[in-house]
Image (cartoon, rainbow, N blue to C red; front, side):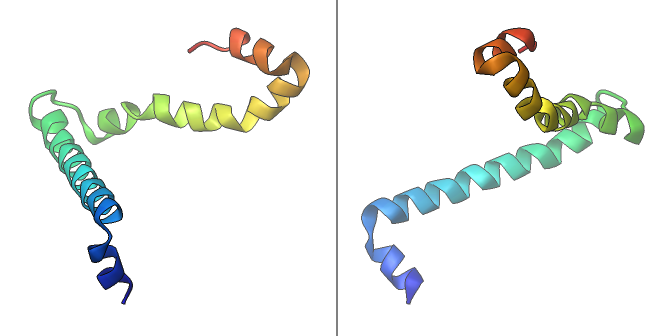
Length: 83
């Protein structure tokens, strides 16, 4: 029933299909990235995992963001952290 309603709604149908295509393209890119890093860049499994460390650091830093914002204020926290 919901899919039928969505199919008749032009704007939401277009957004849902576009979102689906974007997710498909992103997943395909990540799948190719694994092969590219192994065959072209000659990264070991450890090297491939280490390449994702900046993203993990951002997640870890988000844990301390509220404390930093309380101490320095929002503007001060933005100035104090590297971007």
